[in-house]
Image (tube, rainbow, N blue to C red):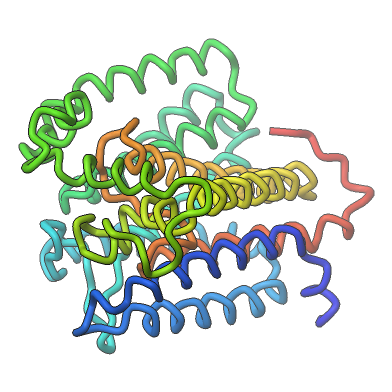
Length: 368
């Protein structure tokens, strides 16, 4: 069984741990600004827990997840509903659970659960349901989780869930006319979604469109982030020497705007390295998905890369001022135990798929 662990993708693992290392170094450089909590130690604890999951999961056959997908879905729906009534409210979002002195955000794990559920649902129902029925059913089931997340309210995570659904359905072999219908539904959702946004969320969009209109108010975060990104130069100011981050001009510098800190302290070289490593990560996860021995493994891999890509695009986009601020962490780099653990679980599943692709050389993959 130990052989299973060494059959994984070591290039993928190298990218994961290099990104994690950059994140931990950056968090360590910011730790003096958090005298009442050791953010570096806390993040290190979750990094160890994630590593243990990564080591253990290859011994578990990912195909068993298909049988667990429906119970996991309803369990997660129940947890998301429960935090609305019993969860702790942090930064205006009532989606946190206090446990053993740590704060957990269930919505981060809902992304993994949704990927598992959709991969199982789509692959199993492919021969049982028509494309249109499968499309509508998957949309309805996803909408339940999205609704519960929006009630927290957490617009950023809701967008990620919608993006996961859209991506997985799009690569599942759906017909072009149904894909066009999918685009219309997405456009209508975006247009009508404006009327369901909270006032502060609408203000963030106005700020994105006109960041110079209120630099000391709603546009402060974006303005300070742009200053940090632009001031790093080629090689940066050095870890722990960024003026925007160390003098705390940049809000949420260890979570939402950590890419701005990397850009300021490590410069264009460090920021470019982060982008390169994410590119390697995406490429290797897609490769694992395309070489999966079955449709379920293929959809798991494509769902994972969709989740990671959407979060990276939103986080870096808001750091450089091309997307509104939505509070999405940068995977493996931002501070946050729930986000880090969920990403490690996702990578563990991909590693499991990759380690089993050689077992089924005779399997004729039908594609999705």
